Length: 150
Image (cartoon, rainbow, N blue to C red; front, side, top):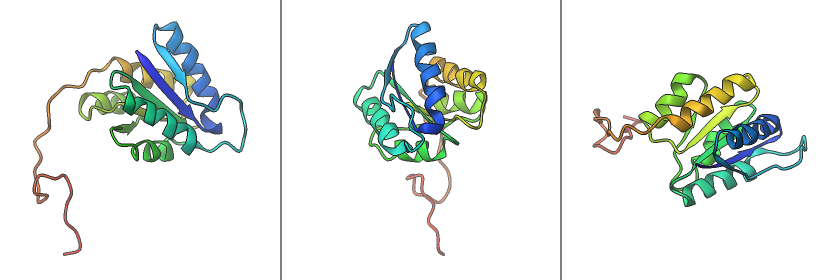
């Protein structure tokens, strides 16, 4: 599977590890940067590039990595066609794919060991989407958004 990766300086080492891990496990990683470590590198250009490439390649998945994974997930979700899930446990990595059809996983490089993060990615890549749309309930008229300010 083709997997697009992007990070900031805080996720640089983990990204490089995952590129090699993906190759060793028969995947086709595409490193969207940064390619050299620079402590000033911020996540938006690299994570957006990975998200855009993932959205344009429907049979692919993406990985975005930063210090916490929060900003990277937010940035990736700004790209039309991207459904990015922040994984902080094996269960959230699985549910992001299985229940939410996520096509990008966001991982906090400062939040997890290399082994933990690699396991999240492995689970994410091997978990299929269940294909079941959850039943939506509540006062949202079926659009998934609650009205507020009443």
